Image (cartoon, rainbow, N blue to C red; front, top):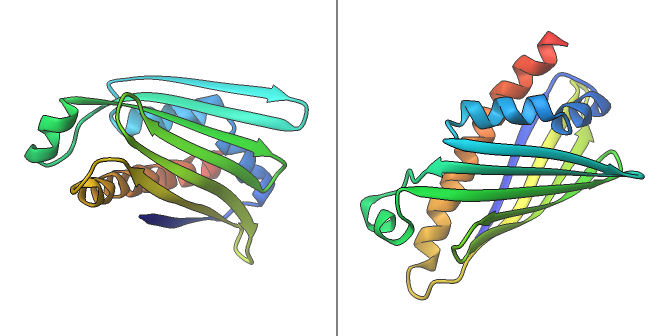
Amino acid sequence: MRLRETIDYEAPPHAVLAMLTDRSFRTMVCERTHALDHAVTIDVAGRVTTVSVWRSMPADVPGFFRRLVGDRLEIQQIERWDGPVRADLAVRIVGKPASLDGYVALEQTTAGTRQIVDGRVNVSVPFIGGDIAKEIARAIRAALAVEAETGREYLRAR
């Protein structure tokens, strides 16, 4: 299932990139998405910046799916920024056959920057994989909405 979301910021791309690669910003997003536990690392090697975010989240899914996944989900998100405008994106639900693979891109607009998150949600569960993918996409969209609101506040404070 394809997932494509955009977030608009009133800041130039270099400021948005600095925010997205800032450990304090990522930590703030984890806290605001109600992560039960989290860890954020930012590694810089030459021109490549890797952002790794691990979160333990309450399983906010319908009852039927909760029996499959339990009360908590561990989510590992890795963005590999190889330059100022695009990152490879991989999101894994640890121990479950579900993932998102895609990219994050930053585009300059007349008002600032548009962040694009584009990828494919993959679930390797026969018969009900499509329904699970819809739930994962819903959760990712909700997290991105929190990230957008947090990002706008973060950028206004700078």
